[in-house]
View 1: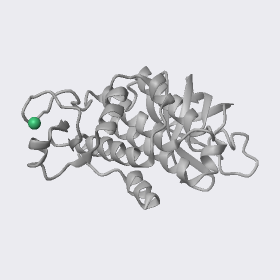
View 2: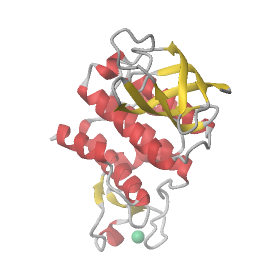
View 3: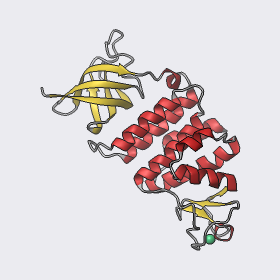
Length: 249
Ligand SMILES: [Zn+2]
């Protein structure tokens, strides 16, 4: 069987048969693909741990008739702080659900691979805020998809937005001035400080974003806006978001 190498992250996994697992992998070289890990659920499996959810490995895969087969795994880094924490796991699930939805099979996108690696590393760092890091991921993936929200001029009337509290409209894809916001049913309120943070995120200023102390109230507004924008463009509810929302309340 012909083989190939891949730098791979486990996005999803499904028990299969007696002892196998079917994996959805995000690879740098070949994009998203499904593969089978034979015997992965046996207690003494050599791959155990390396094929944990969200784990990154150097893999050798063999071309199969239906699914490619994981032939060798060499673990890179660890994800134990994600695995050991419900909230971090929930945000990592959100990342993997979104990436799984937006990427086509076997279409590698370097920027998305790098973004996922960076986000999972951050979610695994106990001194970081998983909410702030996942919000950053949402803005960056919106940028990748070409759905950056409009944050300078009101998409309703075209006027530059004043430095004031406003309204986020996923329908119109951006922040509405107060007057236009009054006619929008589906959006959410946005304080002037949240608008400033969103602008910084949209400008890809990660350094400044990392230095901000973002309060829970601001994060609520920022998450509401970015999640609504993404769900609107994907035209579907994200399952992991429903779970995250239930954790928040
Ligand atoms: Zn307006």
